[in-house]
Amino acid sequence: MPTEGPSTRQKERKDPDQTSGNLVLEIRALTATIDALKLSFEQQLDSKVDSLRDSVQLMICLSVVNFTLREMAKSEEGPALERVPKPALEPVLGPAGATAARCGARLPEGLQPSP
Image (tube, rainbow, N blue to C red; front, side):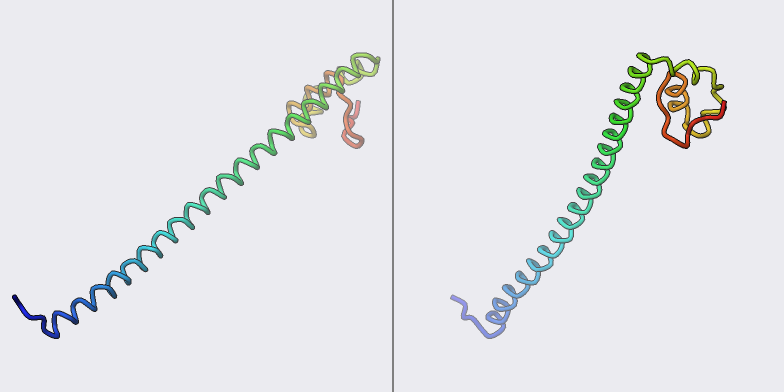
């Protein structure tokens, strides 16, 4: 049976320290990975929220245009805008807005095209 000398005992003492040091390094690496994943998730979530916000704004805009078109169909104000040429409306309203205006949508004050 071999006897334990001071060198064997010193090795036994160093091993727990090395294991502890390795665990600390692994914990730091895992923490960094978790932080990176969290940041990535937050960025993706922000992107999804922005996309959803844009979609909701578009839905609201389309609902307003739809309502306005229905109201204009009930009145006789619509035909005046139908005579406005498309190029006169597009720079101010964009293609969809120009089409909506020609269909009788009420335009906000200050965006009325000149006849």
